[in-house]
Amino acid sequence: MRIRTHRARDRDDRGQVALEYIGFVAILLLVGLAAIQLGVAAYAVNQAGTGARAAARAASLDEPRAGEARLDPVAAGTAAVSGWLSPKVSPAGGGGDGVAYTVTVKIPSVIPGLRDGFFGTATRTSTMPKLQPPN
Image (cartoon, rainbow, N blue to C red):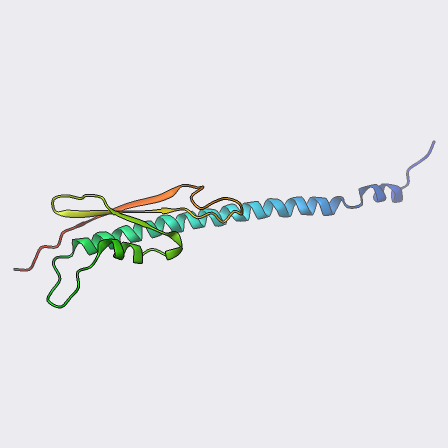
């Protein structure tokens, strides 16, 4: 009968800590990427809302004064959103005393291998009252 010594057991367990460490680091990286992805998605939603408000505000302004250029709502909405989000700005009706614009952006992916828009799109609509001309 052979008795295993403490030293032989240690030799069998060699490398176990390294494997556990690698597994733990991989899980931490996945959790970190998920948190960053959530932040990017929230940023995309925020930017869509900002663009919709800017477009609706530009459309709600009355006729420009002499010598001033008329604001283009689509250009205003596009300029208000970060360029890397590639916003799509479109009128959403509004009718009556208000104007509405919708901005849609694809939620970018920070996870390698996934295309932008894999997590869907962020769409926001904003309505602004039409400004009445001064008397």
